Length: 318
Image (cartoon, rainbow, N blue to C red; front, side, top):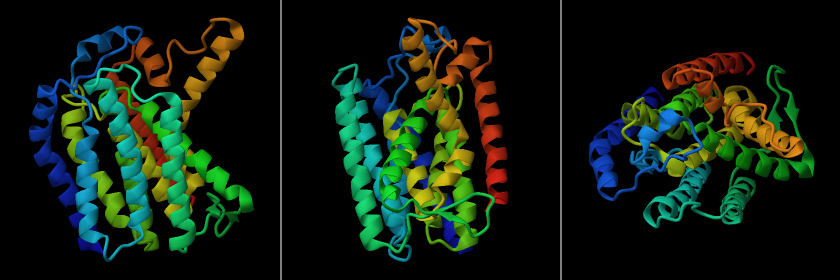
């Protein structure tokens, strides 16, 4: 067990670190640079041209590492599928935006349809090829599970797509999504090891890949993960939670994802209802704090500290 944990972290970390200096210049030569919106914070304009699609580093590290352990740990298959599936959707979106120069990338209905298809395959596999129940552990209530019956499936779709888009919204500052998600991945790794759930190779691989990626993604970032990375990480978080019957814990450990997506929903709803008024200076909420005078590094530090504390609280609730 201990060797599996150590190896999965170190292999993934090493792949990410070694590939970084190779992939990042390659992306720069391809001119797959991020185009920063004019309506965003002014401080972000200097990021124009920073290579994006760096999520390839994360995906490749996780996939290669998982292949070393998949034979002995078959429960990582559905997590790997959802991570890779959403990562490929993100890659397609990034490719259209930065390589084909179509600013909107995939159309909203196309992206949503692909997310539904990938989630449906995940559900099918879960129900027919695993013994994992869709009943959910209730935090802080030992041995209590919430079983919604037939509604478990639509609820799963809601959770998966909600988490994926929440993670996507979180990816807006140097190192933010990476820092928050490495803590969430560490939380799932600790729980997986403690409960002998059989998914620790991939949870540890994600943690290792993100630690390596952060070497290139901290402020000032030399590469962005793009939708390739953020959608993949959202798929990972949702899948890992379901494999351990812990989707309700995402509200706790993934609180940052939740407030990011809620801030956008609240802002848009209020804007339309009031004819142009805003609650936040800008959404997602990390931009609001930026416009309040917080530095990027301070926001990342605070959001990471909040996530770390909530992960500890969630451990107490198991």
